[in-house]
Length: 113
Length: 113
Image (cartoon, rainbow over all chains, first blue to last red):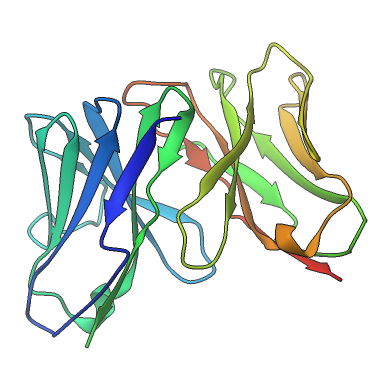
């Protein structure tokens, strides 16, 4: 089936630096991709909807300048956590609609030290 | 966002037993009801999904039962195995495009050997 490929799976960065997470659609084109954040033992929290060639739509309470989303092509969406701080440490997951249904990437564990 | 209520929050089952997780929704426009399985440190994986025109769908040991009039659906895991230990999320959506599924809070399943 169609695959949503996410990289890296884990990243550790120093406080104040920026981190980029990539989400690729393999064998299909995704005009829309979705970005989630998940805290331990909790459900998925939608952060933003990424639209190819246009600005992302952010959910209420999500800082646009902190979480930069770029969807420059039909197969790639990126989430950049800018000036990361320890409170940004979390599990980030992307998703997209595929022929198999609503499909998630494998997630990225971000740890800010 | 319309809520999807999921229960129980946690479930402990003996190996070989039946695990049952229930969900209820409000929005009658929903036409796609997937279940996801998530292991620690991984993204949610689509397990099985159902459309409202059928009352039951079975794939291996996993069965979705759907009650349209009650606006409820449930996941049954037959002959539960320790490898089934994971967090399970139900969701409800209008399938495709920019529609965003509404997720339940998740059920942590532990299957004892």
